[in-house]
Picture 1 (cartoon, protein in one colour):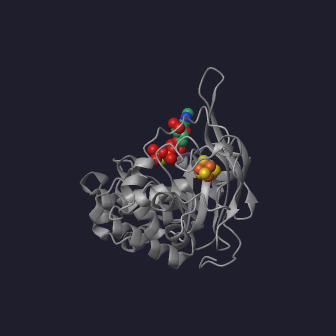
Picture 2 (cartoon, protein in one colour):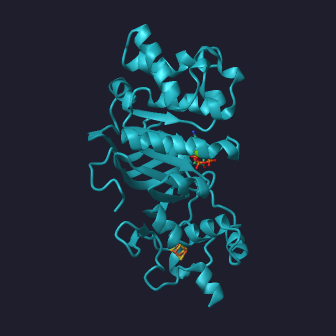
Picture 3 (cartoon, protein in one colour):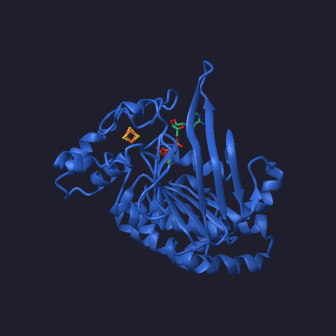
Length: 334
Ligand SMILES: Nc1ncnc2c1ncn2[C@@H]1O[C@H](COP(=O)(O)OP(=O)(O)OP(=O)(O)O)[C@@H](O)[C@H]1O
Ligand code: SF4
Ligand SMILES: [Mg+2]
């Protein structure tokens, strides 16, 4: 059980699917039948290779793109099909931080105006109240209030991302979706941003969906992690559970590549080299079978369902878990 216990989820997603029409009557499946819950104060990490559907999922749960199928329940309300007009007042409770702070901020506005834009839109405070809030928010994200009078042009990437975070938390949202928020930043400033986010989450009990292709980052910030492959969740576990006992062959290969000191790593890295299939023509059966080192004949025809792995909060979609044939490194060292 995560440290957030059994509180009612802020976000509850069931069967979420997003397809794009890509011409010639073909459909690209970016997100396929995803189920997940995020509770107050919890950070759910979502990890997967480029093109696995992470951003599309993040956008679909906030209704920045319309889901093709499935449901999104936010704070107890089904928002899957409600109009953008009805969504507008709810937006103060669900905010997003993007990868690239340079393009997320209007370069002509001052930092103070940028930070208070959502307050103006959703809370309508007076000018002086907004100025006080801007100063408090700047301090909260550890930016000197001197920055409030400046425009984005003179700020570093890390400082700009702090501005984006201040903007995102200005209306005290219940859910923050962060799409690769540290990927464009120097390594030296990433840890500071992650610390800041964890502090804010613990103070405010907001829920976070933290999207990243980088396992080291995901591990630092997440309570639970979902591993995405070609739009599907192949494994879900506590951060500790995933790193200690990754069960899906894809997760094992990802994790091995993340730990370069391990002598088995070269093998695992090699295992991940195969071509990722096109999301326009998803392979039948288990979509990982074209790259999986332990695939058997049945993997080409059977769609794996989630199977419990050890503890209650850990599941993976692999038909070989029951007989232990899912372990890729053990296979080689046996
Ligand atoms: N508007 C769109 N129209 C058509 N295809 C799209 C569209 N948006 C995304 N896709 C496709 O959906 C799939 C998932 O893309 P998405 O951007 O969600 O992946 P991602 O995991 O965020 O990748 P990255 O790590 O590179 O950001 C990709 O194959 C992508 O090309
Ligand atoms: S179901 Fe088969 S192909 Fe898929 S991960 Fe498990 S062993 Fe590999
Ligand atoms: Mg993305």
